[in-house]
Image (cartoon, rainbow, N blue to C red):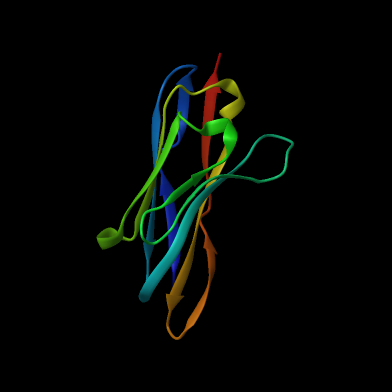
Length: 119
């Protein structure tokens, strides 16, 4: 059974930094793209950043220059380094990944980790 487990969320003051991690586990054959999404209070889930299996990143405009997505293929892990955090970045952050495992393939999601940025 494939699982994605996030860690690294918490409470930080505006201007601070946090690093999120998301590790995939299970009988994984391969992982394609990985990404981070967030859901601010009272709003819909939105894309933050994605990264291809060969390391090409893509960011939503609001986080460009502040957030960096990266991945460790050997550890099936994706990271999100968040700098210069703003109160508007407050949200539950979710990772996802396209994973091939046990003869099937699909998009998997983590359970989410809360990030709160105080002003």
